[in-house]
Length: 139
Image (cartoon, rainbow, N blue to C red; front, side):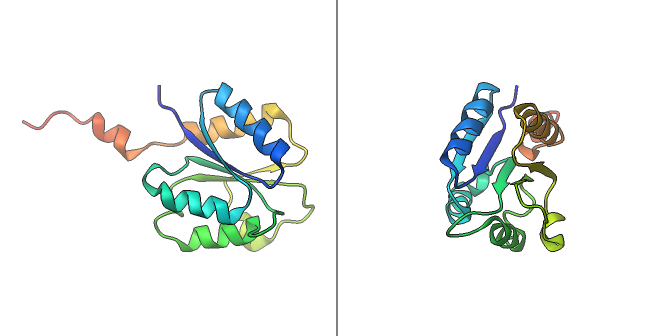
């Protein structure tokens, strides 16, 4: 069974810890970041291992979720390597940013909803390195 990578980006330590523990119990590899800058730093360090799913808060200090999404979309090496889930208590989402997301989890969210969204998005992923292993040997 393939293990999927999830990046949780939220300035709330309680939410980060809850999601990290929950997702690790379900078999995901989880990394966390306190803001968009930390998340971008992690992504640039692990570009080849990039997360399959990013759970992103919008309202954070240092670098907010909106700016993070804009920077992610502008980077050809990162923009298509993951599914993006916005976690927000915001009543309005910027039209220009929401289309970058694959799913929305309104806060407060239910644990079952988090697992359903992450599970659905990871099951839609086909990693090139996995399919390459299934090619018949060259003759």
